[in-house]
Amino acid sequence: MHDYELVAIISPEVDEEGMSKIVDKVTQSINSRGGAVEEIKNWGKRKLAYPVRKFMEADYMLARFKLMPKSVKELEREISASGDILRYLVVKVGD
Image 1 (cartoon, rainbow, N blue to C red):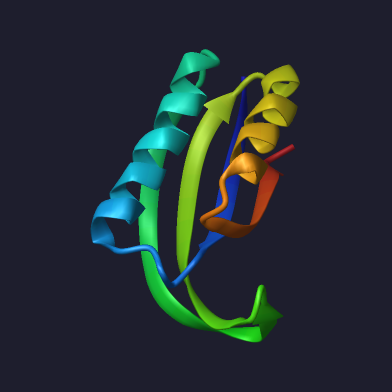
Image 2 (tube, one colour; image 1 turned 180 degrees about the vertical axis):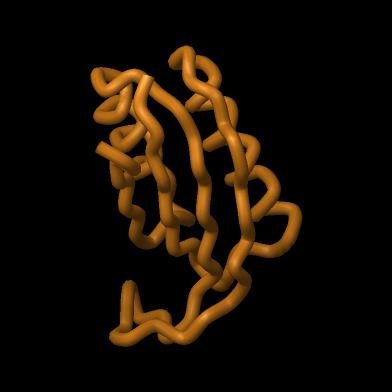
């Protein structure tokens, strides 16, 4: 397993309850693929550098997790299907 980080930009229209559902869904997606979530941080609302789907601010979330490399594409596919996540980036941490 490799270490990864996921940064997600979430629609500002999502409330606290919706945010916790997104966190639960991401956690469940990682765990169901044999991975392990180490940490999830909510960075809060931040101003965007340019409009994304006509929004000028959005909530940011950081997740650190371990996952097999072959499962990352499946995770990305599931994240991109969520309409509340405006943008995301998964990066391998370390070597």
